[in-house]
Amino acid sequence: MTNTVKKMRFIAPSDAGTNIWLEPWCWEYEMPAGRELVVTYEPPPDREDCTSVSTYSDGIVLWCEGDNCKVWREGTEITL
Image 1: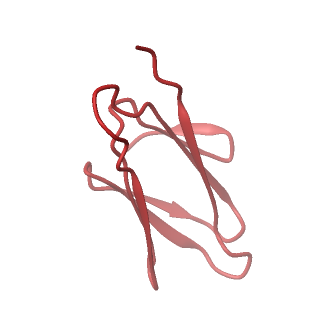
Image 2: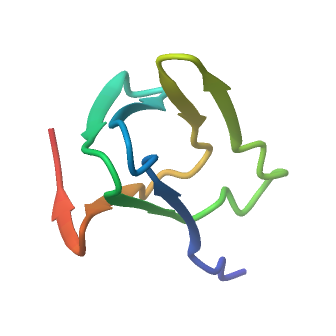
């Protein structure tokens, strides 16, 4: 069975930047004010996709269930 790639798009508020934490890898990405961050991933083929997003006063936590997760900031793939 072939999975389709899923995409999540985040845009920081225009008046302040924010952070995104990508779990379970403990990766932190800074998002300058008004900038875009896109996360793409392939959900697991053998179980339900339990990817979730939680918002907090100091940023966003994305728990990604996919194995092939990629992060794009302003159209450029980034890694830590």
